[in-house]
Length: 312
Picture 1 (cartoon, one colour):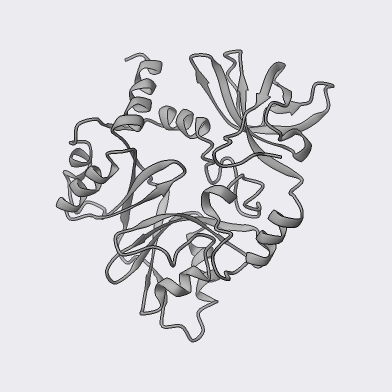
Picture 2 (picture 1 turned 30 degrees about the vertical axis):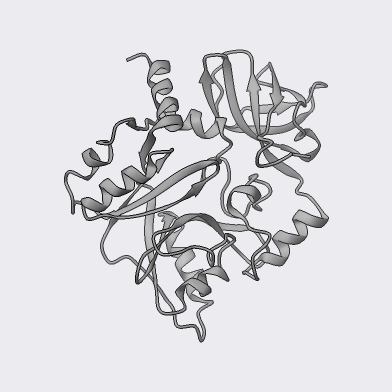
C-alpha cells in the first residue's frame, strides 16, 4: 500500500472511527490505599481529583523546581490507580514519588506482572474500550488533546486475541509508527524522549494546555510552574513548523531566522502531501505563529494550534 494512502486511512479513522496504537515503552506503577487519589493529586500536574472510576488521562510528574520528571498516563480502577510511565524513568520516578509518602494511606509499587498498554483515539474509542473489557483487560476513558481516548491495560499474554479484538469495531485502524508520527506533529502532541524529556519545564514542551491544570489545588512543583506561566517565560519553546518543500528532516537539524542566526533545532519531522511538518525547540522570540524561519535551507512557518496555545 502506498504510504501516504496508509497514513490517510489512519487520519480518517481518527476523525470518524478510532486509531489504536500499542505503547510498549510504558511500564506500570500501581497506587493503592484509601487516599491514593488525593495523594496523587498532590504529586501530578493534572486534574486527578476530578476523575471518577473508569476514567483516566495524561499528566506530568514534576520536581519542586517545576522541571519534568516523567510523563504519566493515569487510569482509575475500583481499587487502584494504574500509572503508565516510560520504562527508562520508572525506577527513578517510583523512588521520587515514594519519598513523598509520609502519613497518607497510600502505597506505590511497580506492577508485579508485566502489563501492556494500548491507546485508542477518536470518536469510537469507547467501543474499543468495551472490546478490551470483554477480553478481560482494564479500560478507562479520558482525553488526549482534542481526542476522546481509551487507555487499555492488560497483563502481557493474558489475552492472545486482545489485539485482534481492539481492531474489530468498524472504522478502527491500527496506527503505524510513521502514521502516528505525522498525526501527533500535526496535532502538536509532543513525544517524551523525542520532543521533550526530563529537566524540561512543561512550558518549554508546550504541554501546559495538554497536561497541566492551573485551577487545581497544590501539587509538588506547582509554584514554579505557575510563576513561570503567569510572571515569566521560558527561553525556548517547542513549536510546530510547516514547510512547503517536501524535504526530509531529521532530529537535530538546525533552525535559523531569516538573517541566518541559529535559533533552535528540529526534534521530530514528517512528510505530508503538501511538503513537510516538524516540531522544533526555538528561542522564545521566534515562537509567535506566522514567524518565518529557515530549516535545512528551506523556508518554514511557525504554526501553533490556537485551540490550545497562542505561542506569544
